[in-house]
Length: 215
Ligand code: AMP
Image 1: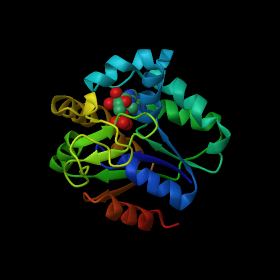
Image 2: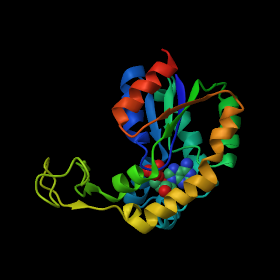
Image 3: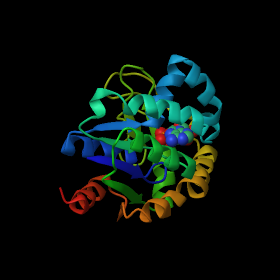
């Protein structure tokens, strides 16, 4: 099964992708995670991406396509994959189409998450991540708060708010989503691939998506 996950930042793409990975035995490819790893490692890609990410802007398409071409050729992608956070622009979608053709692969569906904006803003600005690199547990002040403020329940590490989860940056990311990524819904609708589920609870959205995927 080969899927694309579409949805605004904070719509639950990562969480629902992980559930689909378990259900269908496929791999999750998150460009956001790959880029954060590259920034943390200080690699050349990380150095190129860092400033864009801090502002809530998209990293240039050329950088992203280099990452994706390398990743999709890896052996663990053979049983299937879910693309989480990619493509983010029409040019990326077109480049992905070319790449999949070159690899003789097709897409099964584009999963689109429709989550209210107020839920997204509360969720993203309330997120706190453990700064211990070997833990990275995620909490949310709105729902899954740590027992002690600012301290990880699991390892005792300090919790921090990611730069791109501060309110002004969250609003910039949402604006970028509406301008650059939302048009992909129409693009893939023309290919008859879009499955949309609406709501705010990730577990319910997952159940609806599995029913629509029908496998
Ligand atoms: P995410 O965790 O998917 O919200 O991604 C975090 C940040 O990484 C985004 O705000 C962008 O700066 C960058 N990023 C992730 N995926 C892409 C992509 N496909 N194209 C451009 N930038 C991306």
